[in-house]
Length: 111
Length: 114
Image (cartoon, rainbow over the protein chains, first blue to last red):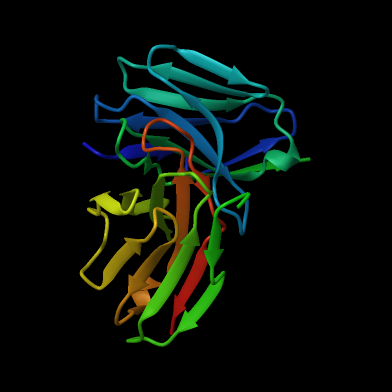
């Protein structure tokens, strides 16, 4: 009930490609779905977040797509750059509880 | 402060020793969280504080782990009788309140038990 399952574990794309990272959750009480980006030696940093009342949210080159009926959400990175190479985590929670994180996706963007 | 500060950044300890990890959250952030990050295991929730109380400590792996928060600010995570499986990066985060605000993470304490 409390899991957030993330795939793939790792991803390699060429510069300009559109990597897609997927997450699935089980707890229907979850109503906040953020994505975090982590560079080596640093803590994760909030990238973008969505609530279940919308199906898509864009911030710059990053887009979250949300499918409430399937209990799935995904991150798309448009025109990916070598500087986007990092580990990405999806997460979910409901108010008053701590975020539950997926296991992460290591993205490598080759130039 | 401007960000979440954790100390020490690295800690090497002998098996069986006790260690204390410190977290200074962003001023004014009432919620504080501890997570553990091991290779390939993502971010494992340990405990969260709202003010000085801990509404959820369900993630603490064993009774060797404890945490406290004083003055609604600094928090200390204590691991007693450390074991090799405790080796990981311990991350602290704070947020304005335990609602839907984004977490600000520190850079973590890398703990190595030898």
